[in-house]
Image (cartoon, rainbow, N blue to C red; front, side, top):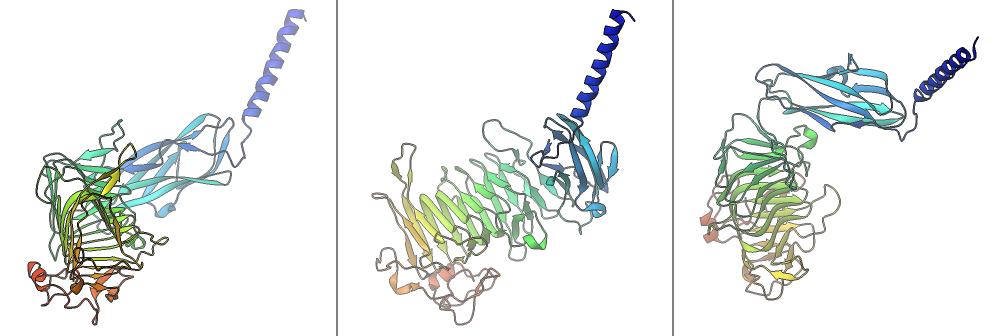
Length: 480
C-alpha cells in the first residue's frame, strides 16, 4: 500500500470515528429537570364562527432551545377521549403520545383540530382543554379554546405598537340584541361620536382581562328591564366560577365619554365594575346608573375620577377594596342605594367601602386639588365589617363637599358637623340585618333599623324599588 493510500484510508477511519462519536454525543438525552420546552403560543384560540357542525385545525410549535436532545415523556390532550380536540404530533394522530425526541435547537409542529356543534345550547360558551407535556418531571401545557356556542364575538384585530392594548372597534351606533350571547376578548372599543346600545336581556361575557372601553365622545347605553336585566360577567360558566371575583377587567367610561346610561343591569365578578373618568364638555352626568347591582369585584364596584355620576336604586357590594371610590373630586349623587362590603374571598379588606378624595400628586410630586363639588347620599345604607366604612381624604384649600342624610352608616368618626351630616336622620352602627350576606342578598330582614326610616320626598322621586315593587311610605333605606 502506498503512503498516500495509507494516509487516505486512515483519514477516512479517523473521520468515520469522529462522526460516529459526534453523533453519539449529540444523541445523548438531556435528563436535567432544568431542561424545558418553549412554545410558539401559550394558548390557541379557535375563533371560527360556526353556523353548523364545524371542524377547524390550527398549529403551534414546540422548541428545544437546549444544547442537547430532549425526550418528551408524554404529550396528551388533558381530557383524553372525552375532548372535542384532537392532535397530530410528528405525523402521529392520537390523544396521548409517548417518548418523542427533539434534537438540540430543533422544533416540532403540533396540529390541533376541534369539532363542535355551536348550535348545541348545552355546550359551554367556550370549550376549553389543553395539550399537556411532561419532560424530565416537568409539566408544561398549551391552552386550547374554541367557541362552543353560536355567539357574537369581539376579538382584537388592531395590535398597536405605541403601548395601547390590542383592541377591536365596535361598529358605530351598534345595537347588541339578546338573541345570542356577546363575548369580548381583549379591548372592545366604542369609538368617538359613536354609541353602543344594549337591549334588555342581553348577556355580555368578558374573557380574562377583557374591557369594554367607551372612548372620548363615545356613549354606552345599557337599557335592561326589571324582568330582563342586561348582564356582564366572566365567560367561565362552570358553577365553580359563578361568584368568583377578578375574572375580567372593567367597563371603562374614559375621559370625555358622555351621556352614558346603565339601567337594570347586573355586573359581577370582574376587577372594576364601572370606571368613569373626567367629565367631558357635556353638562349632563357622565353616567346615570339605576336599578343596577355591581358585586364581586377584585378592586372596586364603582371607581370614579373627577366625574359626574347620578345613581339611584343600586347595590354596590362585596369588593376587595372599595364598593365606591370617588376620587379626584367630581360631582356625585346617590339616592336609595345600598353599599355593603363583607369581603372574605381572599385576604382581609383594609380599605373602607366608600372613599372620597379631592386631590392628586402631579409628575413633580406636588399635591394638586380637584374640587369635590358634591357627594350626596340620601336614603342610603353604607355598612360592612370594618369599624369605619367611610374614608375621607381631602387636601387643604380644595372643595370637599359631602353630605349624608336619611342614611344608615357604619363609622367611628364624629357626625356632629351638620354641614356634612343631617344628624337627626342618620343611624350609626346599627346592623341593617341583610337577608343573606354570604349570598349577596342585601334585602332587609324584618326588624331592620333601616325599615321606614327614609325621606318620603326621596322615596317619591324613586317610587319603585330594586325588586320592582312600590316603595313603602315612609320608604326603607337602601335599594330594596
